[in-house]
Image 1: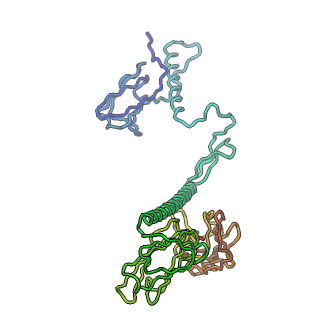
Image 2: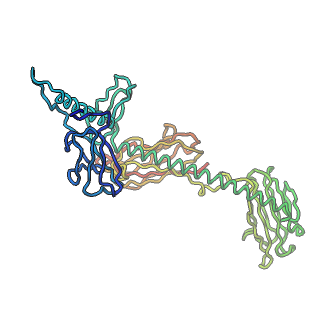
Amino acid sequence: MPTHIQIGDITPRLQYIADGVQTSFIFPFPIFENDDLKVYLNDTLQSLGFTVLGAGSSAGGNIVFDVAPTSSVVVTLARKIAIKRTTDFQESGEFRSKVINDEMDYLTASLQQVADDQTRSVQMSVTEPADVDVLLPSPQASRSLTWNDTATGFVNGPTNDEVTNAQLHATNALNSENAAQASENNAETSEAAAANSAVLAQTAAASNMYATNESKSADFSVLSTDDGKQFLIDTSAGTVTVTLPDGSTAADGFRIALAKTSADNNAVLVNRSGTDTINGGTSWQFSVAHGQSVIALDTTPAPDVWFAAGVGLVAPIGVAEIQDNAKPYDIAFVAGFDDLMDAEGVAVQTYGELVVPRTLTITGEAGYLDVASAGQSVRLDVEKNGVSIYATVPEFVATSNALSAGVLSTTSFAGGDRLTFKITQTGTTALGQGARFTLKSILA
């Protein structure tokens, strides 16, 4: 019958999840003294409110809390002993087996404790090369720890702010990409809807919305007997002029449809007869490829009034058909702001680069400087593939917050061209802070 603790192959640490009712918790590993058992509720070491039972037993024991731990609290029981010699053997002294066994049990328990601590520490795989140096560099405040270029040791890496800024820039770039993709998807949806509308219009025309269809490819006059007719007009050879009948010769509510069958941008020009008006004027036209228009007569006023309205397209509107003020594509940059967008001094450096996604025409710029410079102006530049697009660069004149426009020497950008924004000069006695710059452009 053994008279000493037997240390089995067991981890000297165990955890429970409290249910708010249970007060007694078993620990299956032996302890030498009550103080060898450390009790934690979540991360807090406990010293009162419980009783330890079973010290000196090879099978372990249990603790009993005075009050059941709160539900969901993690209860951790761990053997923590001082790693030390407990016995000193004297030369030629008595050699008793119990003393030897107790010493060996204590050493084994110490090794189990170290092994458990090691399993929860950072360590390398046994298959990694032995020449990898895992000695940490000297601590530097707010810097991350990273592997060196050869993956053979650790070095101090970028600061927390630098990592945060990189993440912010990456997020902004992803948001911009997603917004661009959404815009492209919306454009494609609009194109499909326009095409579908035109198909419906053609289908309706073919199913007796109009009495008859008549093809034209040269100038012609509409007769007072053409009420309810649709004219299919080919403008591929050039503008086709359509002359309406005099309102006095046609019935009130007289209507016709004009539909372009060609994909060009040549116009269908509609002229009045006599003193009639068309949408308040003497003529009306449309030139959109595959465009369609309905023209109706109102004889109530004098002179007679023709109303013209477009009703659909069988092909999407292209950029060429849109007015310049309806197709802006402005590009914004900032300089002289910290990661919280608080203004700080500008510096001579590159502040932004991008790849132009589609054909653009640069028309000018706008800008504002939060804190004006002193001593000399703050100058800005934009480069196309590494070459300035300005004959005279824009600048914030010293003591001024307003931007003085530059003189453009290059205005055209194609998809794939690189566009770079930089500060080329700062103030002297005061650098200037918080520059906001927008490059004005339109889709070409």
